[in-house]
Amino acid sequence: MTNFNEVILLKYGEIVLKGLNKSYFEGLLLNDIKDRIKKYGKYNVRRAQSTVYVEPMDDESKLNFDRTFEECRKIFGIVSCCRAATVEKDMKKILEVLPLYTDEKLKSVKTFKMDAKRADKQFPYDSPSISKECGAVLLRRHKHLKVDVKNPDTVVMVEIRDYAAYIHCGKVNGAGGLPCGCAGKGLLLLSGGIDSPVAGYRMARRGVTIDALHFESYPYTSVQAREKVIELAQIMTDYCGNINLNIISVTHIQEELKNKCREEYFTLLLRRFMMKIAERVALKYGCGSIITGESVGQVASQTIPALTVTNDAVKKLPVIRPLIDNDKEEIVKYARLIGTFETSILPYEDCCTVFTPKHPATKPILEKIIAEENKVDVEALIEEALQTITYTKLERN
Ligand code: ATP
Ligand code: MG
Image (cartoon, rainbow, N blue to C red; front, side, top):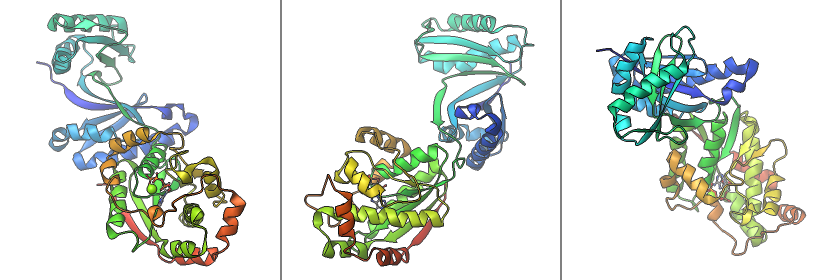
């Protein structure tokens, strides 16, 4: 009986387009992979031909193979993942391992497509011949199976590569995007809601390292509300890596706004304060952008005129709104994927829902809002709020 080992093959996507910078991106990706899976044992991680090979090297890593595979699916920069059998580059041995390795999968499907790729041109069979021989073996073994080249239930693949042949079926999608940390740092405005964790995830997927900022309004908002946000940031680390979470109190700002300004503008005035404070925090910690979970039309403070008013408060940095055109349903789908949904829907007040106006302005005019804003001492309130900052470092488990 021919022995074979199992490895994980990770194919990367956009990195292949990076030209002269490619090795920089590959380096980040490899480091991230190694860092994530080291808790599961000893692995050999190497790359060749736009593929990363993850090979278990000890008993522990072999035992944890399933977990490692799931972990790899969360890594940004990878577009597809599959488990593969490694076999010596010998047709007889390939044909021996192929049916064993694909047995379980092929019993559960009705149609398949056999595919082969011969990167090593020294191998004596070309790709069509490999496909033909392998396909015939599988069809003989599974009488129920039919070939469907257009829309198969599964693709069985034999790849003849540099050091070995690889057999796999059941390729699954990876997380996509670009490797962690390749796009600098961004400051995520993290509320306790559904949207902002998803916004952070989406920018992390583009390679942005996430710092987070939460505004609370204790005692109008509760200790549980704060703990919920810490929990959300902790869940996010699973995809986004370590997160520095800053928390700032806007209690006094809200009281001042309530006492001195028109109620219909209350939410927008608060949002302008949040943006101004966020910009200062972002600049202080070297974040190149502010990220929010806003989406056009979702609530009164997210109409285009309202966003114009909020946007005006930030002068030096881009405000990135990755969910700007997403329906709530699409956002919820992401929240479930990254595991934040159940925590997000816990019913604790956010500072935005404290003193909410009955009839918020949906078509605000910037000049009027600024005139209203000038009824309070903006600078002094910002300085005071910045003094309340606390900081929690959340690490990926
Ligand atoms: P979410 O589900 O993210 O809370 P939302 O639909 O409740 O969004 P808003 O409350 O208007 O909408 O907030 C819009 C965005 O402003 C949020 O996605 C978040 O980026 C930011 N934000 C709102 N409240 C806070 C807060 N307390 N601390 C930090 N950022 C906040
Ligand atoms: Mg909210």
